[in-house]
Image (tube, rainbow, N blue to C red):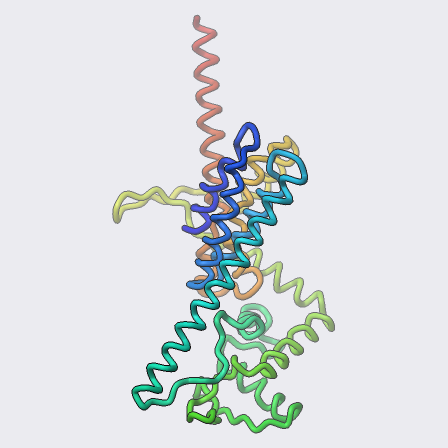
Length: 311
């Protein structure tokens, strides 16, 4: 949410500026650096880049300007990502040299710079897809995939259900992690895609249930002061009629404000909706802010009308 707020504040000139300016190209440039850097800490904040991309391709000006804004965002994100990868490679090489110089056995096997894709998806389908064998357990995923990997690829990986590592070790004596084995990801990928292809209505049902949970379990709207707070009754479901109204009135700037925080819900929608995964949801907070603005404008307009009538 913090990264999304920074991004929204930075995008304000693109959203509300009366005319295009050259300095606006600095916005996607800097935000590309921000998202690529935030991704090195957690993957989820980088998803807000989708909202910034929408702002760029719908900004005021010609289509050429919009394309350049979006291209600047993509290029900035890509270059910064590569620079971070080189930075971590250098640090890893330094660590290997330090451990070797001290007489230790450095880790030389493959490593993941970021979360693998198919392992968390398999893990996350336990929220509403458990009847197809998905479980909210890393070790259960290993227990499912490793025997298939051995049978299909002729390997001899050994996994014990109580362990998060394989019994197998690399040449330096380090135990292997299943997520670093390419064949492991391929087996999970095949399982997930096969289930979706064979029964697309099942996966659509999972997404619909996750959507319902996102709206029902969105964080409450609160006014806080220190440790004290007051809950304000405001349902996240109100976002839908508000969005329909704004689309009908063609209030495009407010539409973009309303949907800007939508990517904060993507992990709960695409990966897993159980536990606290719906807590980062923030689109309804933007909706409440808009609703508050509408109320203030309506009341001020009513007061001004009564003042004129009395005059």
